[in-house]
Length: 207
Image (cartoon, rainbow, N blue to C red; front, side, top):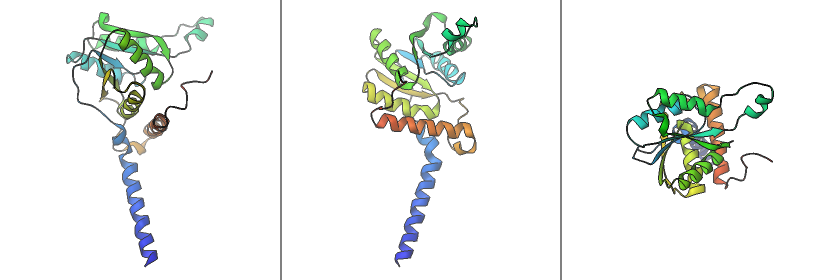
């Protein structure tokens, strides 16, 4: 009888584990309903899908401005070699313009950022400096839950944040284990969430 109970327990655990495993991609996608805000903010990475999605959100009239972060890059080192480096923010700016967003409403944050935590801190500082009270964050589907979690941890949702996923992103929420790109995304997002839940003990970079 004890063996039967143990077997049933193990089976239940395995089934529960399988359900959690299969549902991880969909769980990471935490998207809000769109609403009007002061700013659309395109998080770094996921090019060109994130910027293209932001262009669509702007065209739908949800916010009057689109902001871009400035991911850290090797431009200074390359300049010493006489090589010109074009940053991701410039490509995103061009994508937005191609999508019909006027140049004068596109704002690139001045400070370089190395990860999501620092990016959100820069966004919050700039939003407060400009007197903005709400923002639509556009990012990849699997990144939305981590962005929301870090924003709550750092800013307590003040300014108010709306999370919106780039729907053209290739991440497969229902079958993420079928290719290494999506598997690595789930692992990265899971580790980032653990860091956020632990109070962000792992810093953006070491000095």
